[in-house]
Length: 281
Image 1 (cartoon, helix red, strand yellow):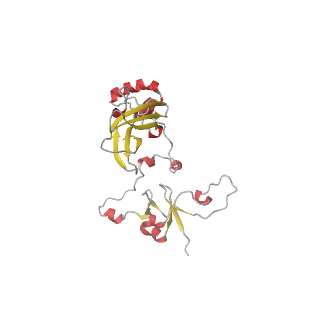
Image 2: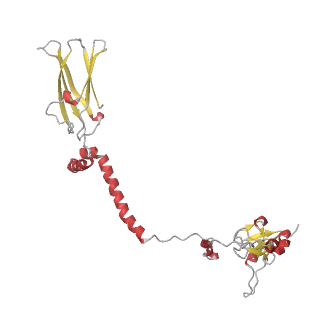
Image 3: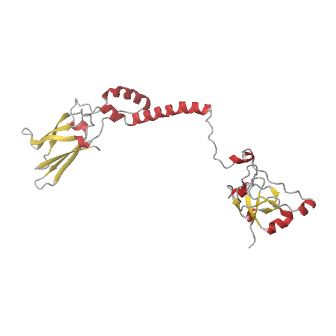
């Protein structure tokens, strides 16, 4: 087996395996497949066999002889033949060695494979960040406040005036909260009106168990017969069952009750029972 030979590009110092055919062709002229520099492959042959370290401090050995190289070892196929001298004599322009890109050429060889150093941000960018970040935080806080305005006004009544003024500019409105689980019918009764035949009187009490105001719900009244079959069902909106003094826009105050009294014409049916259901449409 023939001994492997290695040559090193003088431009980028990449080491290549070379074949005798490459060294014999065109007087050993080859082109580096990495940085495109044309060089004499035979003149830059090196040995990668490890040698004993000399005891004499003044003797300088080839760096490749000190052990395995620390740069890329390329195969012989990475080398290209040098430009043909005959083609140059015939009038064709000679191929010039490709130059290393400017950004790479400006970097010293020992730093070529080092990580890029972080550059300091420009002063104008720092000023933009200082101004933009607090502004974006304020805008986000304002958007969140308007989105949850109903809950904020309900739980912190002192903030309601400021939210009301903000809604005057944005066109929004502050509404009481909606929570079916905090409402229940504390008491109810359905009696016949002794003065009017076929007229029923519904008396009920709606209680808000939350500590903040809640929106008035819709009230569904269902009349049933003796077999618990539905004979009449009607949905009543807040203006229909709440008293004239009730403030529907503010809602049912926290920990309070709303009395309900309705007169129902049941002359066409003969109900035996009833059901009341509260819900939000």
